[in-house]
Picture: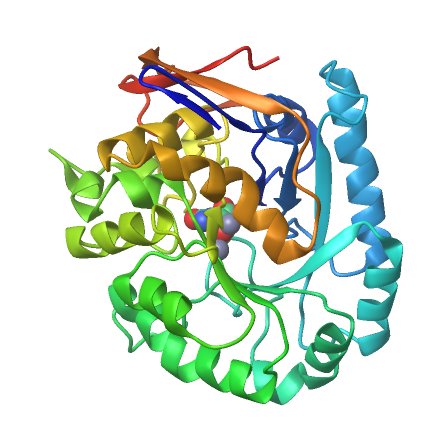
Amino acid sequence: MQNAPNTLTIVRPDDWHLHLRDGVVLDSVVGDSARQFARAIVMPNLKPPVTTTEQALAYRDRIVAALERAGLAGGRFTPLMTLYLTDNTPADEIAKARASGVVHAVKLYPAGATTNSDAGVTDLLGRCRPALEAMQKWDMPLLVHGEVTDKDIDLFDREAVFIDRVMIPLRQAFPQLKVVFEHITTRQGAHYVRDAQGPIAATITAHHLLYNRNALFLGGMRPHWYCLPVLKRETHRQALVEAATSDSPRFFLGTDSAPHSKGLKENACGCAGCYTALHAMELYATAFDAAGRLDRLEAFASLNGPAFYGLPVNQGTLTLQRGRYDIPAELALGDASVVPLAAGESLAWRVVEKA
Ligand SMILES: NC(=O)N[C@@H](CC(=O)O)C(=O)O
Ligand SMILES: [Zn+2]
Ligand SMILES: [Zn+2]
């Protein structure tokens, strides 16, 4: 890494948690990720969800076709596919997924926890043992949306409670299973991942590094800052920054960029998800710079993820330059539009030569 005060060149980064959606929306968003990242773990929460290797291969073909239409073909961007775990995922589906060379992980959505999670798991250790055993055997990571769905648990406590009720028993039962605690939002999540034994890692979004829950209510309700797990208080944001910029290899970049149309966000019951693919590296660089730890961005964005997944580090580089980046007010999203996170504001860093 060359680290001059106003320029930063890092190994080309990857996004280890991304929602690309499908159809016309996929066409609108795929270029934003491909211009910065070499690879992305593509989330399977489509309608209907991607539950089989066959569906994952077909979805991958649609992503590659969309890249071609965007003039971004030629292996510049590789989608790493995932399967959506259900109560009925058979063990041989995991073997098939591993043999495909295309599916790199399986995603746990507790039923009802987040967008398109209705088909998710109702009882992980009761119903999913055969699949979990196969994942442990085939070295297939389990990616976890770590929130309990119990209506009696305060929304802001759902991640912390998940650690005790689900994460710890899961990892005791399957100590060799690779687990990624996705989009962690709390001090408890960061400290659990930092201190736990065995193969565990976590992704952290740019918005959870940059904002606390005040952003949701600044002068009124701000639906474009609403995602799940929801933004937490400042002490949690600080713990996430400390984890992301630490020398632990267990923390890496996952944008959780999750586009929803403007109309579905600015709504009496607005959807959860922030669109950050457009300006992901600008957001992360701004967060790392604010912490005085730009020197840690390359490990977080480009080295720790491949090491955990057992994949090679990318060949190319990405250069960021200090300079004002104005975030557009809105972007086309299929037949509708999407409002990117922090629309209309500006950031302190910009990516040079995205194409
Ligand atoms: N993060 C979100 O708020 N939303 C994601 C789902 C998820 O990652 O939980 C989505 O698909 O919209
Ligand atoms: Zn999630
Ligand atoms: Zn997500």
